[in-house]
Length: 229
Length: 180
Image (cartoon, rainbow over all chains, first blue to last red; front, top):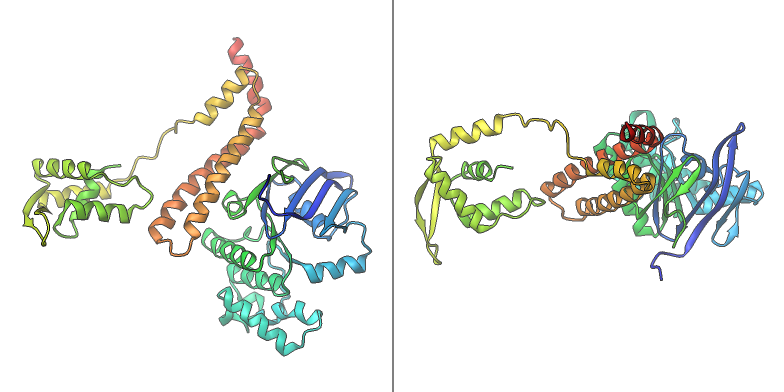
């Protein structure tokens, strides 16, 4: 018997090529409800492509992606984008905040897109900024933030809608070790509290050590415990 | 690690007795092996013999009588010299993992599987250390000790990743050396 959580997100036999160069060659992975899994591997091992397929950002050439028991890789685009908005949160290496908006408006945006009124959205956004220690920077634009502050704002934006899965692609890749520690502590603490699962892509073992387990990618194939026992 | 110099360093803060020195040592270095009382008293006696510390007197504080020790001037100089010396960087570290990879090649084993299993063990230990340092209420001494261990395990992992990438060449060379 395993004590591991029931699979929420399941990838089987994923195949994906970019211009005939294979990035994934039969990768498999399961992410349990509330579980934090680190996907590691050297550059070019297919880590980011795996995340993009699982988050519904790109469609795999072969294999399947199932979320909460339903196939998602075959969903029409409008259903996929709705799912990304309601159930998924994404953080990239360079936050990708909207440069023209203040920190608080960046975080409030996903709520407003989902129909929350501006005032209420900003209030919730402010509470997340407070939690991640960047409330004082709420009126600052992304260009005025340090790398670590910008990543914590990006985390707040990913978590504000209460996603069941957070996808983080090298969220500390551009940070020094102390800022990286702050971002990981914030991400893991908030995800655990909310019961959200996290798929964390990283090449850094010290970052991967924040996760419950590691899945290793080598040449587009998962080795080790990609699939729940 | 020089227990003798660490005790001298702790005595630099003022006269102390053995029990207090043990307690302070264990608080400053939470991830080190706790000092045994016997070791503390033996070391203190040697410091007195070498004129680096001397007996200040005794206090009982309502309990059993305890000997107070203090640093001598010679002891102060000794601890300052030790603390100022650069620690020699290790020339080569004994590397059991490398030895096992080579033996796996020589005995027709599976060095790649061994490296993968070793990686899993390293990651497990790194998760424990990360949990330890991020636990609520972890003191800075614990965080810094865990960081030191994490960085060393991380260095092992980087070496293992590079070795994994060089396994084909390593296997060819190892077999050739063994035949010549």
